[in-house]
Image 1 (cartoon, rainbow, N blue to C red):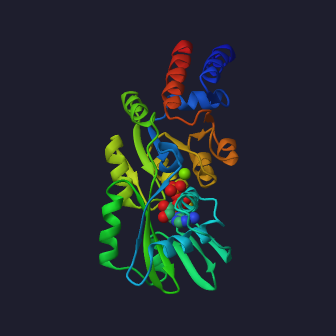
Image 2 (tube, rainbow, N blue to C red):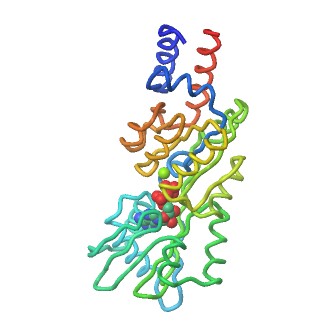
Length: 292
Ligand code: ADP
Ligand code: MG
C-alpha cells in the first residue's frame, strides 16, 4: 500500500477509536482468517459480580465469604474483586491474610486468622487431593448459566463454593455476528472451565472454545494454528494475554486493558469493544483493494 493510503486508513481508524500501529499491522490484518478471543474482559465486561455462596455442611455462609474475601484482598484478579465487593455489600467483615500466594490460572492461597485457606478452581483442589462428584454437580448447575465457580478450602476440607457471573458486554453479540459475516472463524480461549466457557460460547454462536487454558497455552495454541496454515489474530486485555498477542500475526488489545497487552498489540481498540475489529477489517480491505 502507498504511505498515503495507509495514513488515510489509520487516520480513519483512529477517529473511530481503532488504533492501528503501522502499515504492517494493517496489511497483515487483511489476511487474517482466524480470530482468537479471550473471554474475561474481552467478550465479557470483566467485572464479575458475586452470585452465590454455598457452604458445605459444618460451615456457615458468612464465615466462608469472610475467609474468601479476606484472602482475595491480596489479589488483583477480577474474580477477587467480585468476592471482596460482594462481602462489602453483604456487610461481611474482612481481616488481613498472611503468607499470601497466587497460583497462576488456578487461584490463591494464604492464611486467615491462623488457618490455611485456599480459593480457586478444580485444578487447584485437585492439586490438593480434594474434590467430589457431588461438589461438581453443584458447581455444574452454575457453570451451565455461564457463571464461574470457585472452591474455598479451609485446612484440608472444602468449606464451600462461590459462584460469580461476568456479564457479556452489550456490544459483543452484534460484533460476533458481524465478524462472522466478514469471514472470521472465532475461537474463544479462556482460563475458565469448559462448562462455563461452553455456556458463554453457545449464547454468542462462537465457533470453537479452548478452556482451562494457562497463559502460556494461549501462545502455544496460536503457534499450532499458524503451523496448520491459519493466519491468526488474537484479542485480549490482560497481562496474561501479552505473550499470545505477540505470537499472533496481529495482536488486538483492549484499550481498557493492561499496558503490556497494548504494547504487544498491532491494533488497539480504545473503547475495548470488539466491534472495532470489524472496522479494522473493512479499512484493511479497502486500503489493500486500492493498491492492487
Ligand atoms: P482468564 O482471564 O482467561 O479467565 P486466569 O488465568 O486469570 O484466566 O484465571 C483462570 C482461572 O483460575 C479462573 O477462572 C479461576 O478459576 C482461577 N483463579 C485465578 N485467579 C484467581 C483468584 N484470585 N481467585 C480465585 N480464582 C482464581
Ligand atoms: Mg482476561
